[in-house]
Image (cartoon, rainbow, N blue to C red; front, side):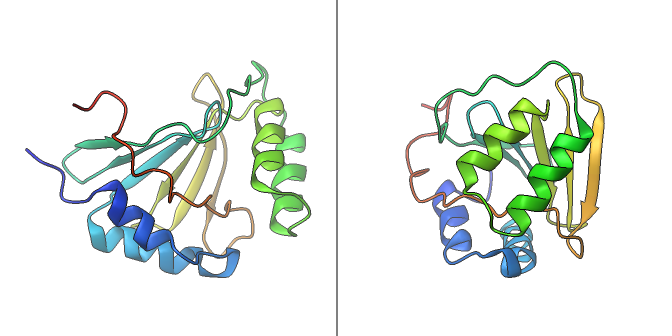
Length: 151
């Protein structure tokens, strides 16, 4: 079965997203049929899933960052807080998350939640959009290349 949304659809939904409009962005993704998506800290690629579990993957967005084996919740909190205050750019933020042992973040457009996980899959933090710790998505305009593993 074919997935109903494309990376181009996701790019269009993302245009103009700011920290203050992430909630609308998530609602727009939900409207496209995105049930959840996971962003991998190691290279920035994301995997978008529809409600049936069909997956669409983006290309990596930055050089490879080594993710620490041990989770440091305090370092993660500091990075999230600083990013929320706009004290660092996306790449600095992601490097700090990698150093703090954050492997992925999972966005749920339906529940308006963001969950951060370690390499072992441990849930490190989960917030609702009303919280300040959701990351501002990076522009995905470069994600119009074919997804990994697609023909």
